Length: 361
Length: 166
Image (tube, rainbow over all chains, first blue to last red; front, top):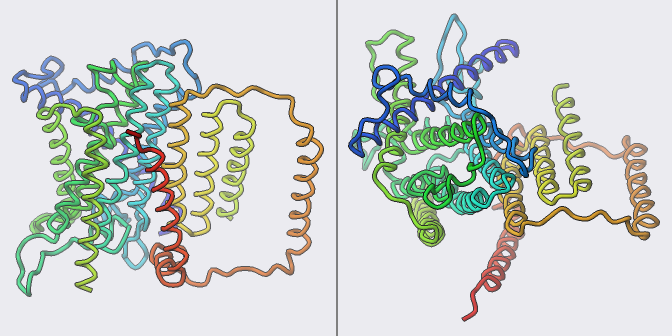
């Protein structure tokens, strides 16, 4: 593939993926309000369109039309920079996430991944530090929250952002360590290679167990840690201390209005998607699923994307379900849980996994 | 060609960030300039093919250490520093010293560019995670372990200092 076609394909992929992602974000808010409504025995949005389906559109229009307030006594530059930083950093992580194998349209074959490339021999290559890029981008995302609270020059914002930064720094450790087990099993940092190493079924003592070769089975402890740390990392209930509305008005985005608030909102939901995608790729076999050979070739190449999307949807639904079920932790409980329970458990998981891997080698 | 253009762009961003770090009066602005320096350094590592080091640079320096800096500045609510008129020692010793040092290094590099030789990046998977791991855990195992003991001592120091006295 020459440079020109590569760049054109990359631009098309970026536009398409960002469009799908942001539409997904908009409809996740709709789904969340509907599901939470049902859990709390009410209807959720019903007025705009059938089943309230046009509600996200109406919300978007409202966000754009509202007055964009810039309070006095804020640090102007950082106040404007912070929401942009949060949204951009959350969107960058999609660039390394693979959605499926390859797709051939009008004679051009391209990988179903923004940063993926198909070589002339047909092999697919992607960034071989994909997982580290996601971790790095997430750690930079903390600045968006921290700077928003500080530049607002308001006590609620500052308290919210101090809580948020402390929480995100603490849980980043457990999150990173929970993934080491996967790296030990797969031996690579490339997300595509990790998915490839999960193809087929588990074989025990020479018998095909018909259980898919997903890493959730040997790494159930790692998955548990990852899920909890990821909830804390995205500031969602039961770990939504940074924006605890009963204590802090709205936390770090108290002073924000209009599109600037919308950017924080979108960043939070895009982060939820990233976390769900990562859980799918690392623990649930990515786009692997039963083959349906009766489909036409284009359907065959899109089927993995459907499996991938279904698994991601499951995790998004889990997010909403837990939000409707669990109350908020207390702040000291949260910190103690992260440092005294999750971190030692993650280290124990690494030791056991590496012993088993070393024994098998 | 593309590599050289990118190197110049990120090199300039890096130097501009470093100068801004010194010029800014507010600690938060200085800390954020340092983040820009770290990020552009990591992109220069990436251009050299050292992708693992680049990622670690972002995760550890820009993502962890600088976040703690910003966190502490926010917590202490440090205000903008006052401008002084500068010390005489800096003017009469520091500035000439820097100029002499920079001039000497620049002159040596320019005049000796023919004699300095070059480093060839021999294997194709230079800078890969596997390579670095092999170096760390075979050739440089002892320094690596000693470093880990040093870090352990630092952690123990932090625990002792942070312990509440009863």
